[in-house]
Image 1 (tube, rainbow, N blue to C red):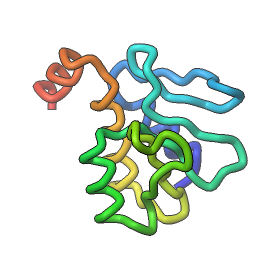
Image 2 (cartoon, helix red, strand yellow):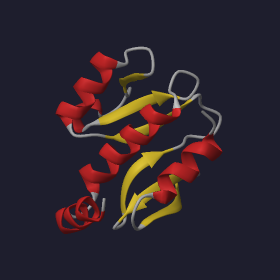
Image 3 (cartoon, rainbow, N blue to C red):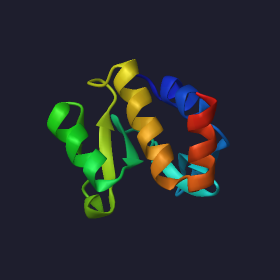
Amino acid sequence: MTLDEVRHMALELPHAVEMIHRRAPSFRVNMRIFCLAPPGEAYVTVKLDREDQLNMIEGHPDAVTLAKLYSHHGWTYVWLDKADEPLMRTILHLAWMHVAPKSMVKASLRAM
């Protein structure tokens, strides 16, 4: 995966926008960050529900790991060279659902 591919997938999610956060691209919904792309790093950081975080780490231990900081709040690394497109789409969608307003999540699920 490349950052451009992640950017494209993140911005396909409903109401997602890109903004700079601490000199890095961040992807947000309703002003809440669901994905960060630290410059020069081989990973993106996503915010997952704790159960989703642990399940993704268990199912994809090479591609998904706990973030160094605030992992207990759901922050999780996804290694770009280890994640394929279906995995990245799933993780971005889970991260988006975790921070999006519940009414927005319900509306997006009905639209599927």
